[in-house]
Length: 335
Image (cartoon, rainbow, N blue to C red; front, side, top):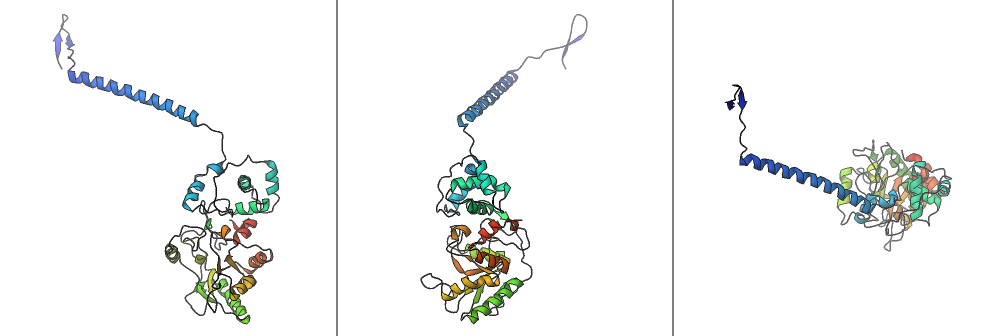
């Protein structure tokens, strides 16, 4: 360090002359700081202006749900609630106490769904309150696949575009369901019930064959991806883990002469017999023309599902055409 002597013989530090380089560095630093503060101030005012410019009255969560808008575009705008193509979502009126009382009169009312009941009823005023409640209970107020509920129960009842099996699901013990092809498997209950159904069909002059039964997730994915356009509705094949075939309780049948439909698409005699008698043995015809807007699938008179005799008999006696409606009216199955 450089020092000089003063009059008192004390060393004094000599001031260095500031070089041009140091002066330039300080000037550049000052310019950067000024620019940074100016940017922060400008950004703050811009955000405040944007907020006031876009401030609008509060809209309902149903109208602002992003998944609905995305699903309408991706899923061919099919309205699962039965009104054809969905139009623009209109914000429903504010929830009113009168509507709440109307919905809560039903035993299958779920308090957590109160706002959804009101929103759906505002969008579909032609539906009665009872229909609104059971449809919302099974998420039919939403476009298909907008939300998906995973059923972790050991014996899931409802599988559709809103309810799926957990990944890695196993139906447990499987046995042969059809003597004509021992490789076709199902649950023991399904196999026993189909044996009784087939014996009854023979006595009525028909004979039923099984052409498809249990499928693994890999098999179901192969079948699904084999379609030319698998993402349209109503669909002909379920996505993996949304398929009843993975439960071991779904069977695809074939009649003695062709299928369960005639050449005109009308139910054949054996198809009619199955529809009128399957419930006596615990089966339902899962996908019909009448409920395709609910299930999301085309009419498949050959696809029967074992749900147990009690449920099947109840559905038949009460003219409940879809498993969605039955579960919507019996939400204890939504665990």
